[in-house]
Length: 458
Image (cartoon, rainbow, N blue to C red; front, top):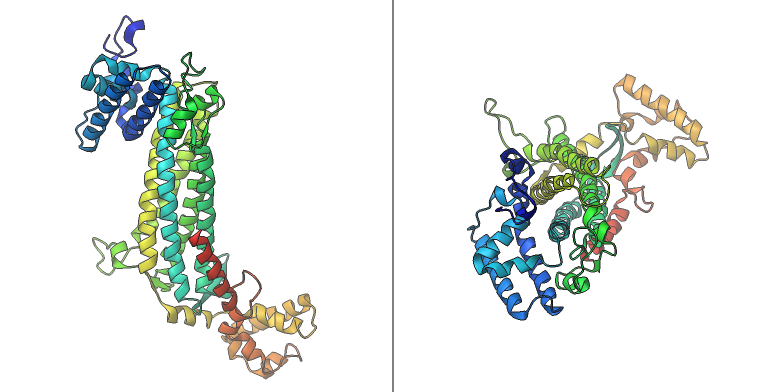
C-alpha cells in the first residue's frame, strides 16, 4: 500500500472517499507550523535519546529544505497523501530517505494537527491584536481633532441629545479595547501545547513534552492527553471574540454608511475606499463599510458551525474535527483583511463639522436641559418633564425650535423661566454641562482621551 498507514488494509481507498476525506486542499495553510512543530519534536526525541543526534541532524536539515521549498512555492501537494502532515512527511522521506520515518515516533497526527492549529492561531491572534491597535489609533486621531465638534446623539435612531463627536468615536475605541483584551486573554488558552499527547493516551516513549513546548514558545502543556487532542475550545474562544468584534465593527460600519449618505452628510469617505455605479455617474458608494457589515455574518456562521460540529462528539478524536479548520482560516483572514482596511478608512475620512453643527441647531435634542433647568429651580422632575413635553408640542405646531421661542412664550408654560434659559439651550453649553465622569462634556472628553492614550501605550 502507498499510504503511510496502509499496512492494515488490503484494498486501496475508494477515489471518492479519498477526495472527500482529504484535507490537504485547505490544511496546507498549516505547512509552516507543521515543519516548526516537527523540528521541535525531533529535537526533543534526540534530547531524550529516542533518536540519535545524527538522525536528528538529518531530519532537521531535511525539514529545513522542505521549508525552503515551501517558501519558494515549490511544494506540490497530493490528495493521495491526505493532509499536510503526511504530505510533509512524504517530502521529508523523499529528501533524506527512510530515516525521515522516525520523525513520527512518540506522536500522532491527532496531537500534531492540534499543535499546528495552536501555533497558527497564536501567531494570527497576535497579528490581529496589532491590527486592532492600529484601528484604535485611527479612531483616537480623529477624536483628538473633534472634541469641540458637535453632532446629534441618537437613541432609537431619533435625535436625543447633542454630543461631542470625539465622545461618539471614543465609544468605539473602548469597544475595540475590550475586543483586544478578549483576544489577549484567549491567548492564555491558545498558548498550551498538545504535542506528544499521542492519538489519545500518550506514548510509551520517554518523551519530554515540556521541552518541546518550551522550544515552540508555549507557556503550558495540556495535562490530559485526551483533552489535548479532542477539544477545540481555544478556536471557539477565538471565534467568539472575533464575532463580538465583528459586531462592533458592523455597528461602526453602519454609522459610516448612514453618516456619509446625502440625508446626513456628516462625513465623506475617501475616494480610495468607495466605488461608483456602472449606470449612475453621480454615485459614490461606501462599499468598504458595507462589506465589513456583511462579513460579520460569515464570522458568526463559522462560530456556530464549529459549535455544532463539536457538540455531540465522544472523546477523543473524530473525523468530524476535520471541519474545524476552514472556518478558523476564514475567520482569521476576514478579520485581518477587514481591520487592514478599517484603520486607514477612518483616518482619511472627512468630517463635515458645519453640517453637524447645523443639525444640532435644528432639533429638540436640548429639551432635557430645560427639564434640568426647572429641576434646579426646585420643580419636581416629573412636573418639569410634562412642562417640556408641552413646550415641544407647542414649538412643533408653531414650526419653531426651542431657541426660537420668546421668553413670554416660555412663561406661558412656567413662571420660573428667565432669560438665562437661552444660554442653557445653546448646543455647546448643553454638551459642556454633561461633565459627569464618562460624559460628553468637553472637559470629560479630554480626560477620556488621556485614558485612551494610556491604554494604547500598554
